[in-house]
Image 1 (spheres, rainbow, N blue to C red):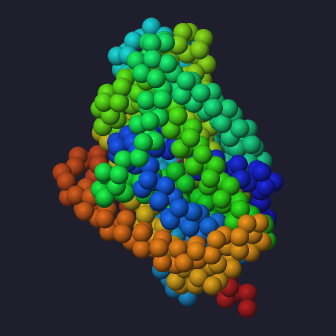
Image 2 (cartoon, rainbow, N blue to C red):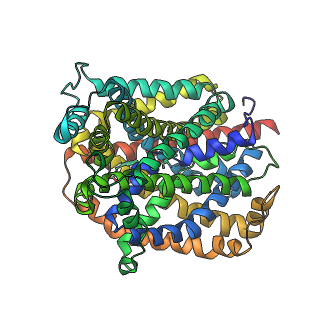
Image 3 (cartoon, rainbow, N blue to C red):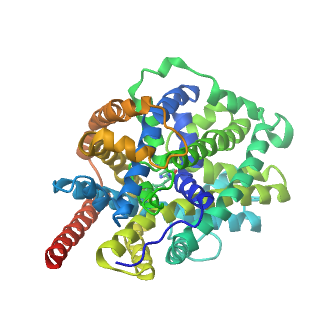
Length: 512
Ligand code: TRP
Ligand code: TRP
């Protein structure tokens, strides 16, 4: 087994963890979820889910990670196994914590690569004279890889490969030498870019630069509580799903990052710092950019209509056009800020998806950092290819549904049961409190043991009809193939875990 890495500094760790959580989800997914679910009506379930599910899971996952790291485990199959070594089941549950990362990275890196191309086109002024229709159809032809948009044939593919190479290269530099450095530069820049755009959004005035409403109209839409839909299960499901996705819980990447924390270092306060930073970026910055700007120009009804069919349109089809209203200079700056912010948000998350995979290969098969980074890049390339080539056939959304939505809930439910009921709440609570620079309120002991598992079980049961509907609905061969592919990936990882387990057992016997 190679020497263990660890984080360079506390600030670096917090920024890397915040970077893990802060992602495309904060700026693209959150505003759309909020709009689709009625604005102010969404915020209350969202905040309740954060307090009763998000925070407990952060503490659980950070402490599981540090606990596993103490025995040299850096990926969830064996982090979980280590907590209840007698049962065979947990290591296969832990497979989720590798699977999700690979499968999400497969589509996430593609989305991330669009931002690189859009930074370039913002600087080059490509969008300036296109008009609203032109900017929207630019996006459509960009993702239709058989059409070339700017004279570069297969542009989307080149930027995708560039993005994968960048991720792989940074990962091969290691945690403190790569991931942490990117977070130290990227996160502050992201905040600066975000503040600039948020100030533009909030101070938008009706009548200036073609805006029809003040930016505050959008803010009011988001922040005026609306109790009427609070009993709608679909709103709660959406809120819970968003909390999962945005905090990166139920994915295995927090456990992995936390497993590189030193033995007795604080996790209670660190977890809160990273978690609240994510909420600030999501609710304050993420809520003050797309929503006020889009509603300021288009009005609430039009924006609702535009988001009805999915999340990516506003960010890539509408915003670049709205920026052009601000004149060539400001629109270039706004474009660089917006897509630059998305890029940093994206890459600090996709790097977090790489580490569990690398940790697994290093721990179990003695691979070196470089080869394991390249292996991750290669797997993402292969699994991502269908999302690139068959984007219009819904492969991208299919991955997002199974890996980015369903898996998280199942994994989180099982891991919290393991933590609170099998590992035991006494030991668990002691783990969370060990070396803590902040005393977690004692109610959380109760919440982790009873409330969080019950909420998770309810969320899971409530999503079953939707899952069933999805499985039984007629689907194209593309979708069937994607599902089979994802299943095969899960099975493949499970086989590797089994192999690693048998190898461990042999070694243990050989030693005595
Ligand atoms: N939380 C990230 C976002 O908001 C997404 C993310 C980060 C993620 N790490 C992950 C998704 C690991 C799956 C697996 O965009
Ligand atoms: N399917 C999502 C939606 O329509 C779009 C999406 C998928 C997305 N993955 C994402 C948005 C990751 C942001 C981040 O809302």
